[in-house]
Length: 353
Image 1 (cartoon, rainbow, N blue to C red):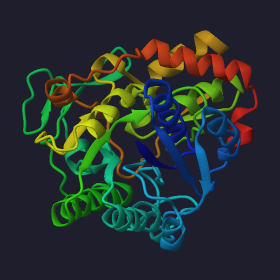
Image 2 (cartoon, rainbow, N blue to C red):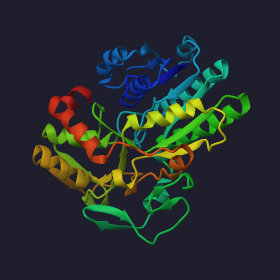
Image 3 (cartoon, rainbow, N blue to C red):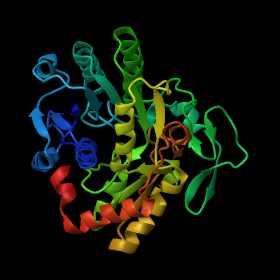
Image 4 (cartoon, rainbow, N blue to C red):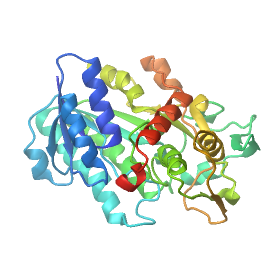
């Protein structure tokens, strides 16, 4: 089987390539990356050592994809994956759409041409930011928790399911991914190639190029290691906002199953995340990091962050029921992996930001 992995020099793409090669025989992986992300050059040597045939190219440029050999499957890991992308910082709204939507369109045309299947790593941020912000919360042990008796469409004590509303506003990043999902469904139906859409929560582990608005677990732990000041932004500066975390290697067994069962009648959209057991607040992450590396200044800011949510935890019950999939790597194992990487790379943030 031949597989094309986009974003192959990034944290997620490089890990997925590595673990597919470790768990599968007779697989050839072509990596595709524009190497625009700071730190991606670090992974170039690594992915080549794994046996990936890495090609420098940009999915936004159709001719770059036209030069790629035919494959059986494409796993799309490339994105500008920040809920703030296009709203704040150096990335414009147009760049968000070009990275996340135009790239998908070109990949769909590539799959149409070669009759290749397409797997999209989508995001929890396709769910309505307004609905997420209005979820009833209470505070417990330095974290927000969903009210115990609350019940509504797509939400339960297990987390956010595939039925949760996707109505606007959902952030520009989320909108670009939701549009990509719709286009994938239409292309797959119209041109007869298989598609799978996996809506992922926060992905994290050692070697991630973390930033404050993306890869926050890695960014937070490395900031403690490097004695860089941090801020709790929004929600009164409490740091009680909660996210779950999933290691990319836990995706691989599911991805292999999806590629092997391309004709399955299973739902095409699946939520994947660490779930409640693999979730924590920023305040709790600070406590873990402080115990490991000592205290630093964490400022409680009254600034509000647009499109933020107090609690995003993915309910992966459908993945368990349909695919017999559950995450294997525990929260503490992921934190320990990042912590050890931070100890071994004391200037990581300076290198990758």
